[in-house]
Amino acid sequence: MPSLTSPGKIHRLELENFKSYKGHQVIGPFFDFTAIIGPNGAGKSNLMDAISFVLGVRTGQLRGAQLKDLIYAFDDSEKEQRGRKAFVKLVYLLASGTEIHFTRVITGAGGSEYRIDGRVVAWDQYNEKLKELGILVKARNFLVFQVILLSLILRFKFQFRLLFFFVGG
Image (tube, rainbow, N blue to C red):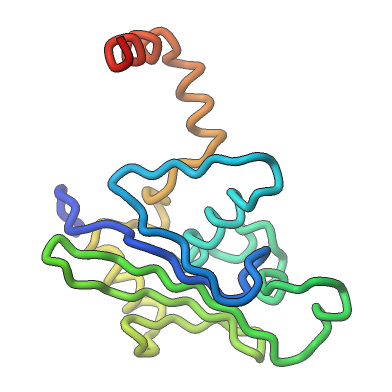
């Protein structure tokens, strides 16, 4: 059962050929509260998909029908190449300063592989380690998406105005 206090936080992401991210990309470090903002087409949704992907969310929920749809491809001819691979690595920083590396790989054969600190593990073991950290994949308690945030702001707009007034004023 997850603890009520957070044992750590997401420190950074490393992506390779995942969706719109060509080659090896490092994103972060993230802070205790991180908001991803930018214009349409900047990759905000693909970053959210990368976090969801590495935490084990099913492919159909990531705007892709198959795993191979999540691998970067410049054009349709690249999409048809065999042996294409991609991965997302989430570096989780414990309060003690120790890092845990969660990696999900899309293999050249089109399958999915899970790793903890570089060691291949079964999904159940991967998911159990996430649960120990308070990350519940089924509950999707690890991200707040734009649509949810906008509905909260609209529902509680009076309270938000007061909060902004006190914070900014």
